[in-house]
Amino acid sequence: MSDWNLSDPEQRHQAAADYVLGLLSGADLTRFEALLSISHEAQRDVQQWREHLNILNDELKPQTPPSSVWKNIARATKPESLWSSLRFWQGTGVGVAAALVVSLSLWLSPASQELDERDIDYVYVIQGSGSQPEWIVNASLNQNKVFVETVQPDVLPNGQVCELWLMVKGQEPVSLGILPKSGINEVVIDPQWRNALQNSPLVITLEKPEGAPNGYQMGPVLARGQWTPVNKSI
Amino acid sequence: MALKLLYQKTSPNLFAVALRILKNRELAEDCLQSAYIKIWKYAGRYDAGKARPMTWMNTIVRNQALDMLRRQKPQEISDDEALAQVADDARGQFDHVALARDSEDVHRCLAELSDQQRACIELAYFDGLSHQEMSDQLDYPLGSVKTWIRRGLMRLRTCLTGI
Image (cartoon, each protein chain N blue to C red):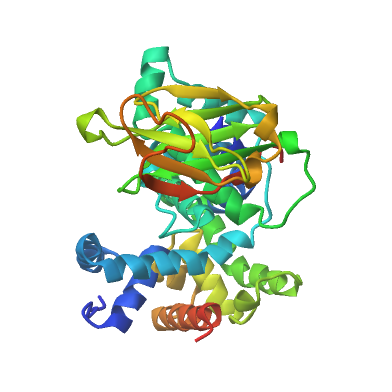
């Protein structure tokens, strides 16, 4: 049918629109998909059109699905045993979904709402060199604990470890422990820094296997970050 | 549990997309279920730098729903009545769009499209129709359908990017 000249940016952009609409077929589709697999520009065009055309979805009136749908999803995604749960979790399951929720909540609830502080979790995603999170740190005021969940940590040379710190203003930095190689670390929230938690930055340092002797003698800083509030109630 | 939170926040919007495409509650429920299991499995591929989360998830639901719709199609084609129904739906599309235009909260950029432009874009986006199928069902020449879509898309892009 139509002969797209995909080396022309404008035609490529138009082909991307047709691709997102599902209007490419036959040889046109094959050619565009081949280009898409190698061209960042084509990928960006497709992504732009997905965003543009998403206004059609935004126009639809939300419809609440019946509760049976969630029950089936929960059943299908439930880990079968502790072992499979651990393996699943070290892969790309729980942690990444948590990271997705973080970015979602940033988009979905930009306005500050009046919420009971107990309904808010604070999350900090520790991103490694790749796009995968390495750990997810989740502070639950409700449970009075900070959970450090392992996702996919890099292995450090010479047995070195990463230590997580809460930088409470005017106080010795509080160690939230050495970042675990697997599983979850739990740290009980101390009344001394509970109220300061949400506004205190986080720091990750590189340490010898035993960790830093105290908050004033920490090793080199690898990363700094802030908590992201995540609203648990809807 | 992260997935439950995600589900609570997003399922009414995603269900609306599934219903719009499949026009059948039972199928839309199946679609939503499969889509969330995919979202869970593929969460690792999500790249916040490239797509907004709702767009990413809407894309998964739409692809799932259109796949299901395509699997339904052969039955419809063997059934003349069902085919006539699809054709009626397509013609009714212009009226539907005209009605939507009257609602105040319609996105400014969608309101800039002509009824034909928006109807054809929606027939491709939500009903999975090809240019030829639209031309057959709307009883307009293939060239008109293609022009409506092309111009509609350009107008949409100009409005959304503020070029």
